[in-house]
Length: 349
Image (cartoon, rainbow, N blue to C red; front, top):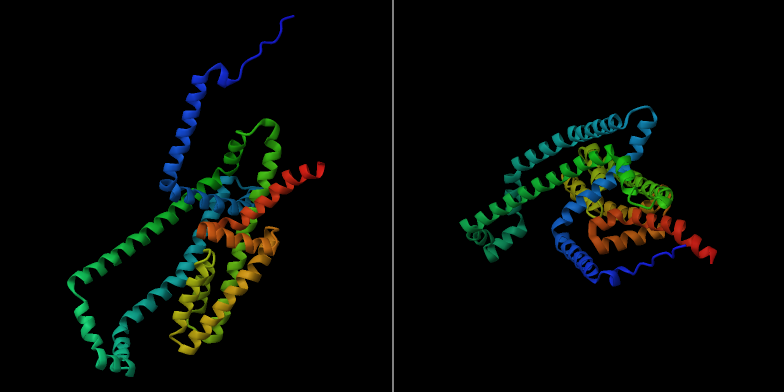
C-alpha cells in the first residue's frame, strides 16, 4: 500500500510563483486605489440604481405573481413611472413657467420700488451705492458672470445626464434582477449558497422596505405642505405639495429646497405668511427627522428609532448624501447578518 504523497506549501514549493502572485495582488490593490477616485461617480450611479431596482423589485414581483412575465412587468412599471412624471410635469411646469414670466415682467417694478425705499435712498445719499454698482459692472465682470451662468447650465445638463443614466441602469437591473443574484451566488461555495441566498433575500427585503418608508415620509411632507399652503392662501398649493414630496426623497437637501420654494411663493401673499411658512417647515423638519422618519422606518425596515437616527447621523458624517441614503438599509443589513451568523455562534459557546 503506497503512502500518500505529502505536498509542500506554495511558498516552499515555488518561491518564485508565490512572489509573482503577491506582486500581482499588490498591483491590483494599487490599481484599485488609483482608479477609485476616478470611478467613484460611476460606482455611486451603480449603487443608487441598484438600490432603486431593489426597492421597485417588490412591485415587479407582485406583477409577476399576477401572471405577467418579468420584462412585461418592468415595462408596466416604466409606463407607470412615466405617467407619474408626466402628471407632475403637467401640474408643476405650467405653474413654474407662469411664475417665472410674471417675475421677469414685474422685475422693473420691483427694482424701482426697492430703489425708492427710504433705506436705499439713505444709503445712496451716504455712499452713492448705485454709482458704485454701475462702476463695478465692467465688461470683464459681466463676462465672468456670463461664464458662471454657462457653467451652471452645463452642471444642470450633467445632472440630467446622471439622472437618465441611473434610470437606464435601474431598468437593466430590474429586468435581470434574479439572473444577477443567481450569477453572484454562483461564486459562493455550493454548501453555503442556500444559506447565503436566504440571508441576501432578507437584506434586499430590508432595502425594499426602506424605499417604501422613504416614499411614505415624502407623502407625509407633501400632505403637510398642501394643508399649510391652503391655510396661508398660497397660490398653486397642489403643485407646491408635489414639489415638496418629490424633493423630500433627496436626503439632507430635499426638505430644505422644498421649504425655500414654498416660502418664496408664499412671499407673494405677504411677508408674515412667508415667515409662518418658514417657521412651519423648520419645525416640521425636526419632527420628521426625530419622530416621523424613525417611526416609519421602524415599521417598514424593523430598525429601532434610536438605531435609525444614529445610522443617519453617522452616514451623513461619513459619506454625505450617499451615506444618509444607505444608512438605514445598511443598519438593517448589519442587524440581520448579526442575528443570522454572529449571535447563534455566541449562543453555542
